[in-house]
Image 1 (cartoon, rainbow, N blue to C red):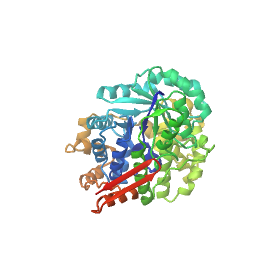
Image 2: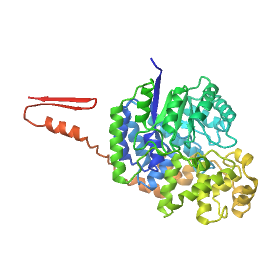
Image 3: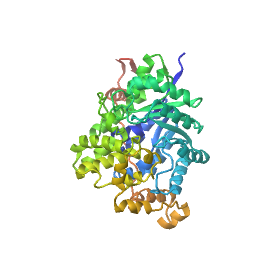
Image 4: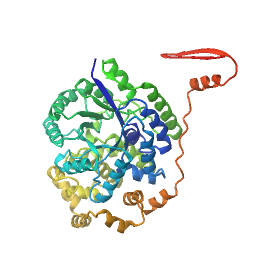
Length: 485
């Protein structure tokens, strides 16, 4: 019998982040989670606080801790995962608060997180990985794929060895930009698996270049046994491959996949109805696009960038921003286009296009990047002329002189409010005081009703009647016999 392939679901995290700009409401999530929980996934990615806390409060006027608590309580069969470590970068959120957030997640019952260093710098990641393990959170450590003159096969083999040396729960070969091709996968993945040694490797990819689904199948043929996927309408496009496609095709190739299609079909129907009602994206397979390899804006960022541009009436400039992002990325030394580096590149490209002058205005994050505060590799690979241009301004000198203190939790409480609960303290640190007041006065979550299919409605209606009947209905592989009387 073929070795079993296990599937990790990304619908409620990366699927909606890639296609719905994190606009899924808690009341929509709960019925979907109920059905995903019955499908037989090995795990489900579920919560990404560094993005979700601010998004849910500011845009959705919802409490992200309700998402966390209610979701964990409903997942009876499938372990949920966190997506993030506790380091948010440069003290924007004190590390003590981020660790408190991590502990709240662990206390809820989530015990696995998928974590990254945006430079694949695993020497830097080691302290965070080890501290998370001490707290009770095991890590799936990402090895992030990218394309540039310096991201060679030798680079990925060595970085895999470095990641495996941490002895994590698992590794994850992550194609965040949807850049892999089948030929590159066949060349690279066997060497990555060999370098991983006895550490299991998961495969996470996006469909930006139109090859994501086929690449997932190829990865399994090459030895991967853990595949990430999402359920339509939150699959394809800039998201992960469709679980329904993965299931059908892997079985056709002779692989054993213990996943139940029936609840997945229910989730797909339910979320598609919400997407149509709310005007949200429905993921579609994409045609191959060579220009992707220049800008490499990842799936999770494209939907958010388009959403923000539309809000300010500039969605029509997305094409120019893609072109500018390719130039900015090269000048910044080909950073991997993953959070937060992809945001720095994309935001600075947008500023350059909107102002009509390259680097006349720069974000604080671009200055910090040029100072090496977001990773030591930036200093090694940046275009020196561009770096000088960015740093030749008063604001750069101010930032260079700043200190980034890391107050402990007691100091944070004294500063932000001694009377705050743990959750309110986290919200205050991640967002602001207004967010705390908003969350205190939110009404209870209203769960989305799940309409039954016409066939189910027909059967239920007939069953409720008093008259005698004997009815058989056949639809493909589905056979229903209803007898009464």
